[in-house]
Length: 256
Ligand SMILES: NC(=O)c1ccc[n+]([C@@H]2O[C@H](COP(=O)([O-])OP(=O)(O)OC[C@H]3O[C@@H](n4cnc5c(N)ncnc54)[C@H](O)[C@@H]3O)[C@@H](O)[C@H]2O)c1
Image (cartoon, rainbow, N blue to C red):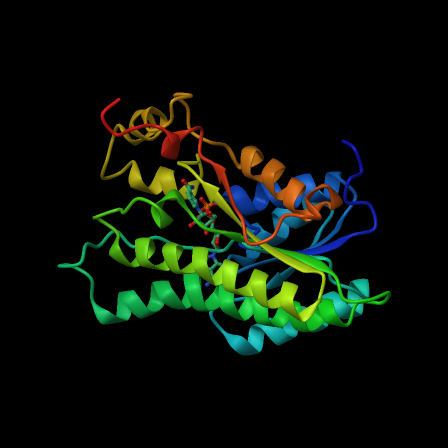
């Protein structure tokens, strides 16, 4: 590893599994101090212990929890350089199937959770010793560009996150905060979300791999590498962007 995040501090939500866990491992390996959060406490703590990160229980949909997480980062690290809003869920329901409780539940985590994260991180990053600075990374999805008919709430949440990111990025730039905000747009990535779908779609691995011209599923490490770039000084002139990490999925014409 290259130590590209030496001296940096980060909060990573949804750090117990999948993409978030891969990011926790990679960021610690690159020299960052990490506070990982998740609703899955046992697994979250195990992953954090193995990586050498701190862990805290958090439901990203709750405003009070965000304040507690910021207080913990402040007391442990004394500054916040990076926030990765990674926690997210799927609910396999179309527009005809979705009920209001499911809709609010998903949007509370996937959209409101990201908004609260951005708001709290900006507050913390503005107070950084040496001056306002930071990098916020939101995890969108290819479904922010192409719709999933079987998951209307997820599609709506990820397309909203995509533009939320741009609004935050431009606001911070115009205020002169030196706080960047970008989206990672993962394609189909082999995590618990895909494993869960295997029960209803037995050939899900092959189907997801076939979506990419590279003919494989993404791995958590692919997303961690992209996050490393956006978090580092190499991306100092990158804000409000969508970093596609989808194996070329959105580049290919649907007829080919
Ligand atoms: N796997 C894919 O193909 C794929 C593709 C595009 C985008 N994404 C996005 O990547 C992110 C990570 O997903 P993943 O694939 O690693 O799935 P995952 O299920 O392995 O990880 C999601 C994590 O978020 C946590 N979480 C759920 N609700 C939470 C809450 N209210 N508060 C805090 N933590 C909560 C879960 O406990 C879990 O550890 C999600 O935002 C997802 O939408 C995934």
